[in-house]
Length: 375
Picture 1 (cartoon, helix red, strand yellow):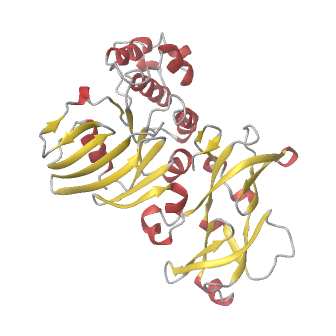
Picture 2: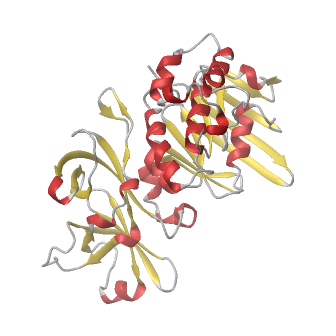
Picture 3: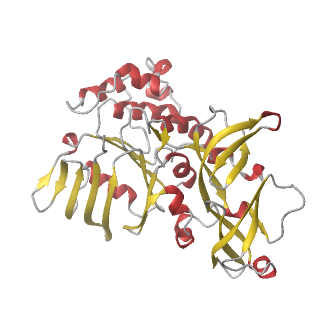
């Protein structure tokens, strides 16, 4: 079934800040709104949810028009069939968790697929929390309950506004697997707001890059993160390539997994998932070493040969190099090293990546539809 199209074409000014956004994306999987704090991400989803009214424009989800300034349409939030999860769970403190979840069912619409109470409880592992109250829950548990309550309202679209922003690293890692599950089960499209690149790489199918109230780029995560021109906005220090791969084997004695991708195989930290699982791996540019001679010693487990397709100066002391190894691979090295190696567009070079340099948390599952990767 063809997913509905999410159409945004709105202008809005508030407190001197101007938002002018135009996006059309298939409403499927997770679409990330990425940008620095103050770029307009939360303002945009408040317009989608109906919590704020645009000055002009149109917002539609498939055939359902949520807002149209020319036609005088402005559906109230309760009629938009949208679930909204804020940075903090905003649970009802006087109700236990069962009561908070049941409240979501009171707001159900009649259309769409209805997720059962038991299914959502199982999906988010909430069974052991049902008789407890919000005051006794951790931050990650509260967010899981908030997501469950939103799902039980039977939304056509789920908005997540930096749901991990208030959590420490341990609780973020606790909730990330549950967020991954939401891409295929129950299959509700999600708009995920974040300024954390690790979350985007692990969760998102599509990224919309927003800066100062404008869309600068819109496309799949792998493509956008391989663009050198976007590096000031995607993050210089943490910048790198995102590669679609498949888990094909393990070297358990060394705590490593083998991932197959268009450029060959990649050794990465052990991934405890079934063979054949589609994955996405992020390789930071600063963790890639380049040389023009074939390495004689295997200090790095991952060695690839490819052509330089783009070079740019990052600062006076650093150079950015994009290498085609079957997929784009981004390397950052000193300007001095680039000069000594006489690197130039069109020449071939070897790229080396240490398996220990690949952060296990950067390995995210790709969304799968009908047994094939959707990427």
